[in-house]
Image (cartoon, rainbow, N blue to C red; front, side, top):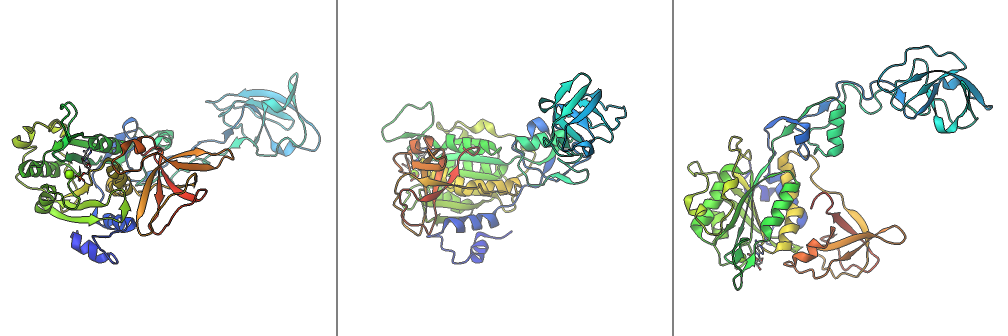
Length: 455
Ligand code: AMP
Ligand code: MG
């Protein structure tokens, strides 16, 4: 395990005061480790989990050649330039094999999914034949030999990997595992992520409004983002700007969680104790990232203390802490060597979501054991001009829609201030204006990170 300084030394031109978004991703990829514990998880509980081993197909899927259509199965050699007349000698239903023999000039009525009778390789759909008594007539040029037959093993081959270690179990992959007759799949354990908001001006829901105070929205956006990723969320609530409360919150979280996310208290000139406590309890770097929104961020490891009990009485007695009860599953230990990974996010609500999506999400996916940790971006045509300085990455909140010609277009959603959460709530994607990019003219193509399935 490398210290933060060792990781920094491996990065070209590391400058904590001016890190590019790419540098942040490179740094985090070296900082975090994947969980190792795995168990067999029933399919209904495996959605969103990460496979801990390849799943090898125990048999061919489908197990037999079968019909892709309702129609008539026959030997395709008989197709010709003139109409072909075939006598129907039986019916093959899905679910059981048809045992009879089929001679030249004969066919078998067949249902979708029924096993192809021996010697037959072609199915003519029932809609395109003419039925005449016991016979069917196939007009010329309607089909080729082999049409409408599904081949044994065309979906999955026996002994070959059907699903790969590190894949996220999305609905199609659950279905694929089920098609192999598997009741369970080997999954890494869920990641446990603790979250708390800092700041004396932050109110928990239920507290009466107070001048200068704002309700804690970050706790809910982070909860949603983590839940969508399939993490177990340890909600520690709002922690006041008091060294003892902050210390108790950090140490308790580090005992149980794989990662801690905080918001607030990391910007330059903060008069609070959050940064001091991060420094005291771990190996933490304080960055200024060349990005907008979300410039300040703290990253590192919080050491696990041997003596610390679950949430101290001091913290539990805090009037604005409401999340003390959600610690669970203490049996499986956090597995990152050197301590719990810390993501100290800025306080502004949009900055929290943007830094989470840009940096925390890929790092957590790596910790979950996933092999693909980034989302593909779409190209959309900007409906407006956007001012952009080269030398920093900007994330604008956007609404992507289809233009009249069917191409994708995107426009920003109102006020783009880093505290304006409505711009995020109205958006369906983030417009990513890359580090080196300059001004955007209306009509230019821009990259968009779609929220679908992520937010
Ligand atoms: P900070 O990074 O602590 O300087 O906070 C920046 C801004 O974000 C301030 O206006 C805070 O009031 C606001 N803020 C910080 N934490 C939260 C939170 N949990 N919910 C909503 N706003 C917050
Ligand atoms: Mg603050």
